[in-house]
Length: 413
Image (cartoon, rainbow, N blue to C red; front, side, top):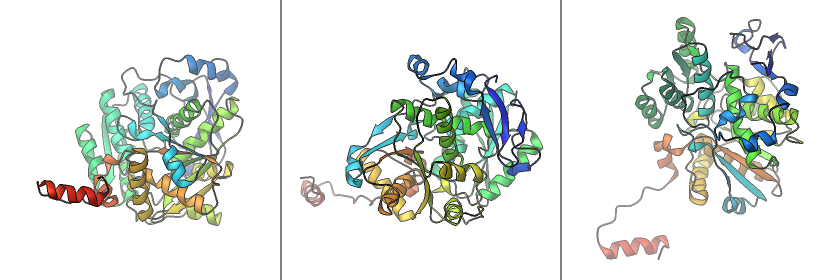
């Protein structure tokens, strides 16, 4: 990792060697989240827009010079290279000048979390660790299980009781050892923390492991590349632990340092009203405090975010904002995304559209600005909540008259 200068503690600002085995600052403990600091002058010599255009690898690993992984895995799933859709129908409905959606639902396990899990498996293999573990409400879990299975590694996943059946099915199919904790995400995290420490497993908990943000930020690199490095005015992302929005921010800082972009878009972080610790901390300009986890958007239902500093700084440093939305508006956004743009989003992902709608109503985002939403997870992961977003289709008797009556009522004929 000659292109990595050091690991930097975001709390006490102490520098640690780039190959340090610790994942948090030994001086500050678990709150001492580390950040990977790069030698940008060295990177510029062999990584630029031209080298990207010539790259034949269309996965996220083409950004390896800006990642802290010394050797990308040879056996891996195709992570990255996801579509960026221009969404004119939805933009017209919202009265927005321009709207794009980055479709991370098309990743191998159906979520953006594959980017972090791919890095975890690469790091674990390099360290000769055979077992990886994490706590998760579902997406990090299913992505780790899939990536580990492909890499020939084992995964032990701690999930809260509310984990959706779609995600539990993924874990089981990929051969993960599932520890379903009779409690919330906080309880699952504490159990995983104890087990990881006791058995020496590789820690895939994204807020604790500084290298995983380096995988998540590649989604921003792709948005920039697919936009010919002319980024929108705003990027909107749903927020749980704070790692994804931190990753987007880190990617922006990287590209700015490499002179590949001229300025940063503003970041809008979206949470559910039933679990909005970042929103409250941002509004009150105070420290983040624990919240209840009362929302159907399980992937962002994190009452005690483990990456508060990076998550708050991402919005602060880009002159962005945080908003919270109701579960009702999330369900409405799920239906809108599917009906207008053909995108099937799980609740946590649809929260980004609900947040954009609210930001437009509140005047945070202007109608003459451009926006990119990051679609973080496929709706097939949570079929129970998807059913809440739509009406149950009636059972029609196999008689032409009844079929015609129904079609007429629907306005199809």
